[in-house]
Amino acid sequence: MSANSDVSLGRLTTERGGETCVVIHPVLPHAAGDRDRDSCLEEGIGLAAAIDLTVRHGEAVTVSKPRPATLFGKGTIDRLRQLVSEEPSPLGSIDVIIVDAVLSPIQQRNLEREWKRKVIDRTGLILEIFGARARTKEGRLQVELAALTYQRSRLVRSWTHLERQRGGAGFMGGPGETQIETDRRLIDQRITHLKKGIADVKRTRELHRTARRKVPYPIVVLVGYTNAGKSTLFNRMTDSKVDARDALFATLDPTMRGIRLPSGREAILSDTVGFISNLPHELVTAFHATLEEVTEAELILHVRDISHPDTDAQRTDVQQVLAEIGVSEGDGADTIVEVLNKIDALEPHERTVLDNRARRGNTPAVLLSAKTGEGCGRLLEVIEEKISALFEILDIDLAYADGSTLAWLYDHGDVLRREDGSDGISVTVRLSPADAERYRRGHR
Image (cartoon, rainbow, N blue to C red):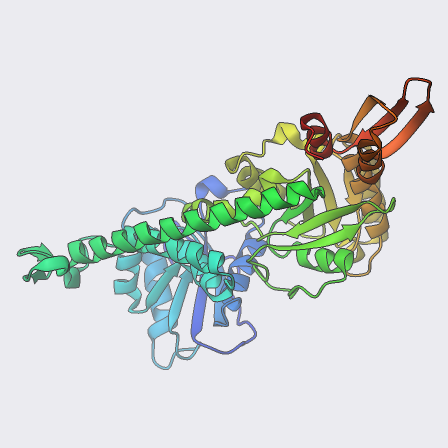
């Protein structure tokens, strides 16, 4: 073992079927102290298991001085080579080595040469999961765009099989065009086609949002780290059956359902894809259309797995992704409610401390268990309170002959006061922001 790396955890994990793999989580200098290394390794193992890889071994390895060519030091590379390739191997046959970090194309190629095994980095693994989980046309387009953008970055001249010269004419490339240039050009053509398709999807989504504004119901969006329990909470609140497995990225395509608040008012609840640390930049860009639902929402519920050892770091990860799509932390007092989920997994004294901290915090927080339903009633009350605070109170004078407008106000708002005078009717009414704008424009 080299001086710049040490093993913090090694294990054989439960087999799930499919190809076999080893998961290596590099503990890099800039990440020291930020997250629990064992929970990071567990997350990497969970990502591999999410696409039904059989994880034969997992370990976290400290890398004090990352090497540009291989990331790991020579000692670590030699030890892992012996682990996966010596005969007979203590792990059995290994098909893939997962490096739970972002590798450069050169590092990936060199590690494959050293270990004589297929190597996938964190970005490639997440793209594999998304590709397996996407169901809607929009999801599939976005996944393919992200995958091709990633694949294009892997086309480096270091791969000798891509150095072949191609002759020929027409769209397959002119004389002297190398295979790598052909591959890059074909990928660019497909990327251009996909971007046009996604632009069409975005226009369709905007039409849907415009239609919802005419209803209109306030939009409440669930966001959070992957496997925080968003889909379980979504099912609890909407009486739905969205896939809520205990697995990373169980939900990929956005889902929307109606909910009824304690006052009887209706709202739309949207479940979104889970965020994750080191989310590939290609996916942040490609999934911007999906995440537009977040920017359009009246209220954001940030669901946190409060029992997770890295819950604070996960909170930071989600806030960073929200900032990338235009939801700043400064908006939190009005638009974001923290939902501290999985309190059923806490000890009684931990729940007491958490409850006291939530009461003193500046950001609204609700403690609940989506699994048992405890606290979900309180969450509905908080949603009602926050949405009501966004409503406008208008004083309106109407002629007696304007019965249609009066009926519209009763149908779409809460009439708080009414006085019938000699010249007409005076009312004080509470309206949603959308309905208040509709009233002002006369589009009733």
